[in-house]
Each structure stands twice: as structure tokens, then as C-alpha cells.
Image (cartoon, rainbow, N blue to C red; front, side, top):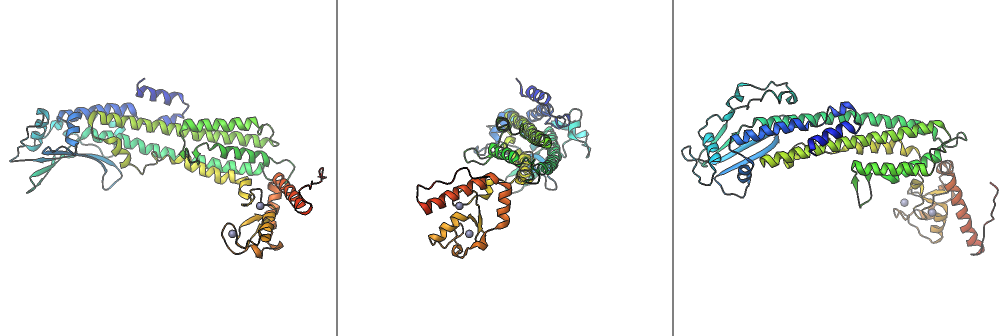
Length: 453
Ligand SMILES: [Zn+2]
Ligand SMILES: [Zn+2]
């Protein structure tokens, strides 16, 4: 299937909102424009093969072509520029290796004749016209005729070849990239707002201990699973970085399956939790849609630039992305920003036990002993450090361990842990009790079972 057709179909069937589709890369239009670019160059005798030969820095031909896509000095707008450096003798070039067409081209240039685009010279491009509308009807005029800078004494001239359709092509492309950027910025801000609202909802239904009905545990489990899923970003070294939309979809499905398997939504105690969870999923799906749309547009850009290069050998596949490297579309930052917001405003609402582990025994740091260096360890590990006369904090090597006493127990943190991690605290208390029992009564110590709750 032809890509133009594929693109059209994807845009129509993947459920993108119509106002997104209106902003998609106008691949068909660019393709038509590319035909004009090609024709224009061919009329100058510059077919792809000739261009490739003349642009090759290794050839020692007396003429050298240089093509660049530079943002013009006073704006961010990328302008294509084709210049020729040509050795002249009395206005004539003498080089037998040139093809007749190319020779004709250079002879035209060197004699300073207006080139074939004389009809185009009649119109001048209105400053406020959007290139998207003008490409079909009007061909904007070359801004000037040939610019010839004769560098006296150096034996060669530098000539700028007017490129009309080429300019139009990049106007269309840039215009669209900018409007995609703008669209993305709007949508990103909206998603961030939604995350914030959802954060409020979740913190309401997951407030610990106030009433018997709290969904704290379930939300904690949900966010643990969500973090494990690494839907949009991988932090593991093997596949570090942003995910493709396909992979993100897979991860999101895994997350949904796990939530379902563990019956987390089913067991919500408060109906608002269910609504909040649906919203959370919806938000992720929206972000995924963005990723898909972005990928589609990037693919369209890549394809059209490749086609451009195939027909002109001008090397824009590499030059264009780097000329507009500051643009957001190409940096894919929407997922990054929204995900950061999800972790700041949503996940962090629910304390995760991983943030409260003792760095020595990896259980919850209960009861928490805060050394004078501010590092926190569980009371068992603190006691054991002192018994071994290890004077230095294992994390920062400050000499604070022997100074610790009952006053170092962080009672605020202790309260917080009891409230937010009741199960982990209970388990840790039990483990400590066994350990102390064994220390006191020997390895055959068995804790009293069936402690009254
Ligand atoms: Zn510990
Ligand atoms: Zn320390």
C-alpha cells in the first residue's frame, strides 16, 4: 500500500479527534510540491544524479555545489539555499566532464541570463499568505535573480541558484510542524490539568484512617503496579528511555490485566474510587493517542524527506531535523511531561513503602531512628550498629551512631508509618520480636502465636 494512502487511513480510523487530523502533516500536498521541486531542478539540468555528483565534496570538478537549510538570521524559519562555486575564464567555463545539460545550466548562470523561472518572477509572494493555501495556484517568485559574487582574484564565482518550489516545500512543512507543536502544547497543558484534578479526587478517597472506608491499600497497589508497568518510559538499562506507542499500549494492557486479576477495582470500598480509576485509565489512553499521532506525523516527515532526497540528492533527511532541532514535535516531550506530573501529583499522594525502608535490613524502618545526620534506620539495626561499636552512619560516614538514644526516635514518622503502612509495621514488629527472643532465649525461641489483636 502506498504510504499516502496508509496515512490517510490511519488518520481516519485510529480515533483521533477531527481537530488533530486537521493538523496532520499534509503528505499529499508535500508530494505534489516535491514534483515541482524536481521539475524546477531538472529544468536547470540538475537531476538527482548530476546533483549527487556535484555535491560530492570528493570530486575535484571545477564547480562545487553547496546546499544548506539554514534558519534565516532574523527568524527561526528554515530556508533552503543552493550555491554554486564555479571557475570562470572570461565568463566561460571550460570543463569537458560536464554533461550537456549541466554545461547548459552553468552557461546560463555564467552569462547571468535569467533562468527558466521568468514567468514566476511576475508574482511576488504576499507576506501574510500561508504557504498551505498558495502552493497549488501560485508559485512564489524567486526573491531575486541570481546573486553573483565575483570573488576577484580567487578565480571563481559564487552564485546562488533561486529555488522557488523548494522554498514553498519547506514553508509548508515548517508551518505544519509549528501548528503541530502548538496543538501539542495545548493538549499537554490540558492533560496536566486533568492529572491535577484526579490527584485531588484520589487523595480524597485514599485518605488513611479517618473513617473505616478508605481505599488507601487498593490505590497503593494500583500505583505500585502502574510504576512497575513503566507504561511510557523504561528505567531499566536494557530498554531505557521513551517507549513506542505500541510498547506503551502493551504495558498499559499488562497494567489493566493485573488490576483486574487482583480485583482491585472490584474491591473498592468507595464508589468514587471506581470513577477515579476510570478517569486514570482514560488519561493514560489519551496520552497514548498522542503518542500514536506524533509517531504518525514523524513517520510522514521522515518519508517525505526521504523521497525528497531520492529525487534530488540534496540530503534534507538529515539537514531538516537538525535545522529545527528545537521544535517540540521531534523531541517527544509530551509523554515525559505528563508522566512527571502523574508521578508528582498522583502517585506521590499515596506513600509507597519503598520510600520508607531501612537501608540495612530493607524492611520498613520501624521504629524509625533518625540519626543526627538525618538518615533513618529501623530501631533493630540501630541497636545492632551500636552493639558492634560501628560509629559511622553507613550511608554518609558521619560519626553519629553512638550518640543515638531514645530521643532519636522520630515519633511523627512513626505515627505516619502506623497510619499508612499498618500491615508492614505489624510484620516488622513481629520479626523484631522473634529476633529479640532468639537473642535472649536461643535459637529454639518461638513467639507466642495467636496474639490477641
Ligand atoms: Zn533495619
Ligand atoms: Zn548519615
